Length: 83
Image (cartoon, rainbow, N blue to C red):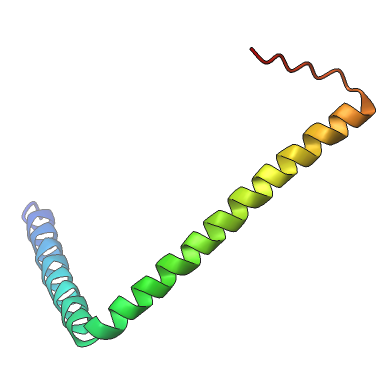
């Protein structure tokens, strides 16, 4: 009974290692097949991500300006000291 955890743990590690090897090999082979499509897809994703980041930044700046002018209009006592 004392040998069972050792054998079970060894078997588990062996099965997981073999599974990981074949998973990595399969993904590597799929990447080689779709290399040209992947490059075009990566470029499209980067462009779309840049657009989303620019829109988010502009909307954040716009919201900040709107909030500042709204607070200034209602006189909420926001003191901005510029050097």
